[in-house]
Length: 346
Image (cartoon, rainbow, N blue to C red; front, top):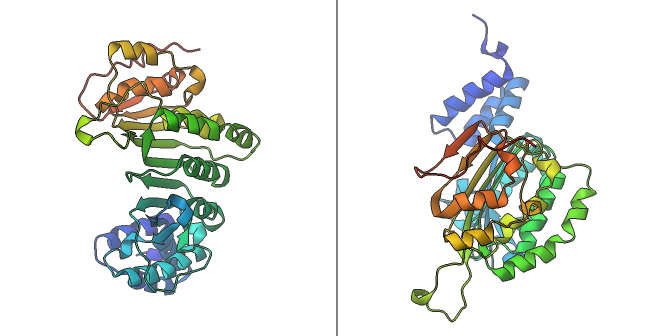
């Protein structure tokens, strides 16, 4: 019988992953396999470092005061131990940064720092989010998939979000899959501010020759209406569905056409939206084509039909994106008014 070492590396990695995921092995137990031979060392490193999940504990003042960086795998430990383990583990991830393919970043509530000495290496335990994103490319140069989750009631500032997405697309050139799970404030004031901040972005991205080319994009956005501070909760009116959504309106600028030209899968889920009335639909229907995303290679579409999402999709996604769709997944059993079969080719 041929020895196990004659199997291809990819198959050995699958076997190791299935065996170790079904039992309670610790990382140090897995690391012992690395001493068997050079091939086992390569396989173990890929197993240990291909996925990286990071928690960003937001402190007061948004990103100005930075985020405390920990790892969810140590969340059941005391905070001092969590910080100490995060310091050592992040250093190990940095040392094997070329093996990291999948990165998950999730913001969470802030925490108070104790007397534990803070790590000051390449991946600092305290960093503003834009500064932390700037370090991703030199640290993890072969990222394939990145997920950013920020669902706190106080969303990231517009300037911070625009900055980090622009940095990701212009530096993580190997990136193929991007997931954004976000909460965003909806008001005319936020829309106006976003348009002002986006004015200088198109030229900066257009002049960049190297951009990530996404194969899939997932947008899961929860809208938070903005009310006057003196309005009682029980007396607040329903959100006006005609109020612009700054994030969706900004997508064609934040995501250049070069980045979306090869995108085959799109997940478009928006919650917190009030369906418009018939009269309001006529107002919304005049949305300019230049403010819509165009995905010419789109084949797979995941769409939610709750809370007026069918009205939002054609409002922000160009009709030309429908022509190549071969798989349409509706998350809810509800009639949808988008007919992708009748769209004429240009």
